[in-house]
Length: 436
Ligand code: SPD
Image (cartoon, rainbow, N blue to C red; front, side):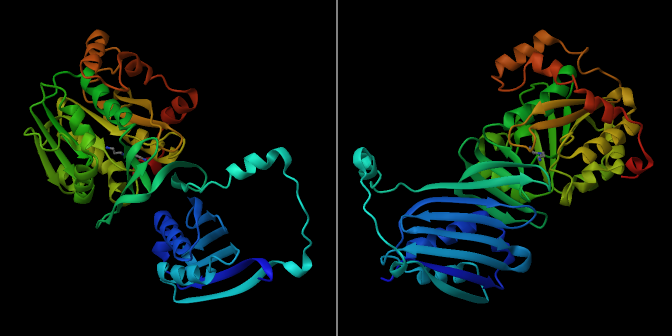
């Protein structure tokens, strides 16, 4: 051996763009490449970048494998650096070429630390010898693989166990489930977090119990979206409910939730539920007027199939289909992360329901970017969400059902809005907002 290490600088062209934007697949390909070359894996760290691209490093006992990808160019730059003779980096090269489905690969090899240019010195470890020896214990592989929900300026990353539990591209969206360290299994749609086992209660308890505990006579409920089943589970805690209709556009969300998120989907087989796989917008267009006491819009974010769930035409149908004492609750996005969607929806609802009947409230959803999430409660008859609350009854309900987020204090506090939010929701509606 004439050098300390071999460094192969690799260019992969014509790769699969989808693979190059997929953190778990890239991490898996890199790990496999390390194993095949005979390396001992110590650690892996992989991140997704906005809007495309993945960077990651596998630290091996013999040095490292590193990558950065440009899916939009179907190109990956890879460094394979190995020390000693026990590992052949060219084996990793061949393995990765296959894993990324590269049409073309090229590489140059550098000898790093040429021995003829180096002079070895003796190092006396002294008291450090014991520590140094202990560090030679066989390494334990730890993985650091992250899911990131982001836009161009804000991101929230959650570490998961590296392997995806479920992935399917439906006709509408990419549906995935990851197993996270802190939040249990987490459902994502088109790379946006929908819910996680450990913090979904905040979302579902707040979208359902806030409206239902101020309107205890609700009998017939419609849920638009909500395919994971969390909203239906909470609605059915209220014994006076006679029927729930849920219209979810994406059968894949329901199937994945039934299989991997049983704590959310547990009520999807309840006899009071009529589960319709279909387009909620079309459903409401054709639904009879004054049919429902309560309509819940449990949508995903306003992209893809959910865009129409943020439109004035849709909410005019919601209004029409509510009974005279009816009410509606919608997830209305983050006042910071999705400010324009939040503001436009608030103005749109004020135009349809009248400003005094539209109330924004907040919950802290830890797995959503910024954590600050909003819901909007609207009525036809003006029942106020705080003054009409029977606080004792709502406290009892929360205790009886062992709720995790909702309680009577949180209910009332949720309507106390920070000043910047008060300002943006009370701003007069613009012509553009009406048009959307
Ligand atoms: N970014 C998340 C927006 C909220 C999505 N709805 C979640 C569905 C839970 N039933």
